[in-house]
Amino acid sequence: MIAIQLCCRSLSIHSHHLHSLPAGPFSSFRFSLSSLSRVVTKKSAQNANRENPVLLNYLINTLDFPKSKALAVSNRYPWVKNVEKAESVVDFFKSIGFTDAQIQSAVRNVPQILLADVEKTLKPKIQLLQELGITGSDLGRLISTKAIILTRSVEKILKPCIEVLDKVLINGTDNGDWFRVLRRCDWVVHKSPHLRLIPNISYLESIGIVESQLSSLLKRQPHLFALPESELKKLVAKLIDIGFSTDSRMLVHGLHTLGCISHESFSRKLLLLQSSGFSINECMEMFRRAPSLFRSSEEKIRLGLVFFLETMKLKKSTLVQHPTLLMFSMEDRVIPRYEVIQLIKSKKLAKKEPSFYYVMCLSEHVFLEKYILRFTENAEELLMAYKGHILDLGED
Image (cartoon, rainbow, N blue to C red; front, side, top):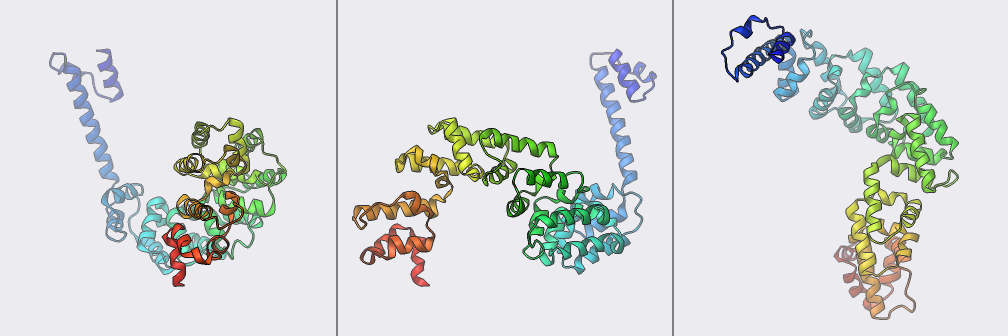
């Protein structure tokens, strides 16, 4: 009875409803269903009152929105009585080369841009992006997924952030770097640069990540620049604990890796290496020597471990010293070159067996010259061993 009274009070239902219920163990359940039905009916009526048929029809008929998506957007703006602004926005986007799909995606992600003033709000921001070298199809691709940029203030946010970041990028407007940075993380232009960008850049420079390294980090992991400074410092502290030094040029690569994989992913790859017999110290040594190894998939690392340790019988110490071996493509480089070297050994074509790591590091052209083409009598057989994709060299 207490539960029913509480339910009545929360739904503003008068107590006389309780006395009208028939006796029995399911009376409270029937009451709950009845009350719920009235609440749902009332909510549906409220939603119906909020529906905006003008905007709804425009989204469906002009932008080809599914009805469910169109309803979700149009219900947010019940006060819109006509679609003049929406039409001018769509016309503007089309005039600068956006496809229908890109416009639809941009509006779906950030519906308020459909109600923006083209001259005062959109054009200045689009022109700013174009000045950064983001033009043509790249502009449409960027805005289709990062339309939130168009909601930031030009004077208070966008220009100050761009001014700070432009000093880090090298010729960013000429080589497409700005497009890559903003496509990967638009958060770098979401807030005043004094909140995160400037403090983070100063901190990174203080630990030796400067000039080209700083520029490279911004291009590859821009979200690191938008982190709270305390979070960035935690990542660096973890690298120091692992054994990186602030005067090592590998520090930035370690930061890149920790910045783009989860703690769980890092731990799973450590366990994978340990399951193949590497000690934790050896694993950390491999990470310090080749941080990017931990950005490889677990399956790629697993296949490499099986091939090098079981098929080739390579010593673990070789992989500890040269962990980049695990990063080479097994199909395109490791196995084909291994087959060639095995054939050379079996035919005793070379006086001295080369270091396999040395062989792996050679460019395609040098490898062909040094280990296939110079053995003229056996070149065809060596080419066959080097997998069929090399045979098309003879067609050039």
